[in-house]
Image (cartoon, rainbow, N blue to C red; front, top):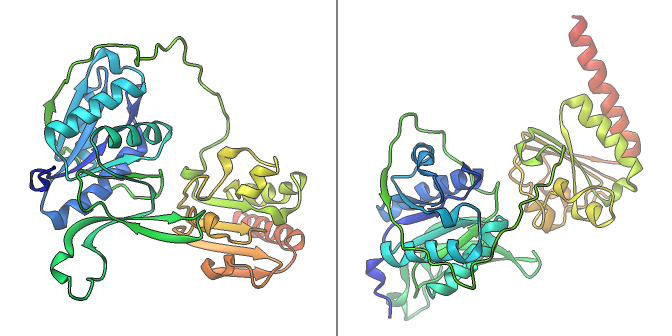
Length: 353
């Protein structure tokens, strides 16, 4: 039986690959700082790798009060067993109240493995994390049983058709994975330093330690849509792969980048790297054009935090208009080229003035 009072602090798995911290680590540290405030506790980054001590200062600048460093040659490249042993050992030794992991390819493998090993639950693909009461509303006559200062983990459920808020009131740590792009990192704190705690549980290779023969890196010239300030996103309504040319023309004119919905990827019109949505990427551009996109909740979950959303769709009842700041009902084949020409003309006039 766990003594829940022993578990303190908000911990973040600070994922690094090739001795470079992934952006998701900084995003989670920002959220951890927010969660730690009502709990009156500190934020700890868990850095696992080989010869990675020089990354600690970066983590401090993005909100870590302390860095637990697990540094060992066995941790040079990600493998499930040594990394799971490292993180589970940190949890058992330092007893965090909350453990956050990025829902990356690595995190989706590591998080569930570790949660099973330390006998706690894990809520995957969270979109909202906050501290509150559980149950959310006290059951009449059982007000005294309502637990306070719990991690409330919200995520889409049943294929995105509903939103569930989940808690883990009886086990620690409370674990969650969060997709890249959902949380926001803080402005870096220049010169910030963190306490560094070096911890090594010992690594004895056994038959669970896979041997990496070769790492082959995919080479892509596709820019990451998560970095784009303007996205011109197309859905099934665009009609064909060839018809994406009019969206590419708009993106070129406005200095943006093309992205798409899942239906477009499933049809083979665009690669998976360009997909926005629950099963794609979460994006926060300054401007998001949703063209020929109906606005299913799975897609909206990936782009609703955009600063300005412009929807173009021939169906005036399309759900996308519920989240759009500006909406145009009509034929995208006529509207988008006109918009592109207007932007080109405005740029030309400005250049000549």
